Length: 420
Image (cartoon, rainbow, N blue to C red):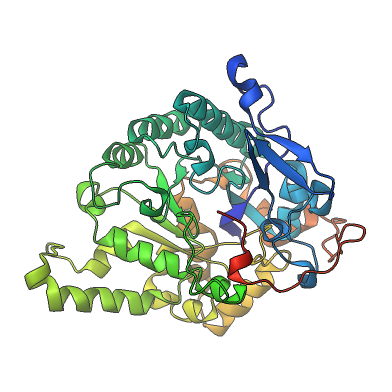
């Protein structure tokens, strides 16, 4: 098996902005503050941005999962140290990884909140340069670069997409729904400069669950389990939104990835999409030309899953060339360090052929994210077995990371969630 993940996460290191900003913005940069309770938080102006526990629990017992702020000492070093990350990837047999941001939010809304947009753009460019040059370029062939957008200005977004493409970055984050962020919807021409740039330089747009800052919450006193179960529903809404937007008609070369959304719901969604179209197009005005909406959707959308036994059983019907796997390291849903075994169990239960498995484990990712690891490493050195052989001695056992005097996590309700 050769394994590439199109959805992992980076916990940014404290020295992220060092040497990357013009002098007039250096004092503005977010920095780490160590608090009296032992936690580490990013300080940005008057705001404190904690590293919420669920963001980096790889290697910890599940009993210690939770939303409490954490310190860097509590994290597995691979969460924020690129050399340790590569070792953890190899220990899991993982060849390549696309890493979503933590500090700026999936869609860069931290920078968008600044009144001084010139400063915001400087911070955003500094972040993207760090991600490409210090994180991805530290291990050639092991990462798929991903940029953060300047969502307050579509022209700047387009400019940045083109700039980072010259550095080899052909993926960008974008809100699964910009409206909750106070921005125009996908049904306007507001974002056209951005879509045009992505089309021109072959950049895939990654819409990650939660990037709209809006979660599916039923009631403030509902157990947090309700929100966790419903999280993928955001991506179902995004799927319906973008297929009925003008994006794919106006920009026929655009590719969108629905990150961390799973795939088990896709067959029903496509059936519903076509049924709704045939039943209602006469009065709604929907028009997909000579194609069905399900066809257009599958031509433009990349589907991603971490663990989805039902979806894998339906993968052949969905289309294996449009499906990519995810590891989600170091988040709570991660399958690290046993991802190959868990995936193979699902593949075998679905009776998939080797060529179909290859599409989902690496070929679809290579095609849709401009990723060519074999130009850096011989193919025989890219397999799960070969990579694990390079990581002999890496300890992947669970370890408790509770701070002294810190109690185990207690259940909380949705009303106890930190502000987004």
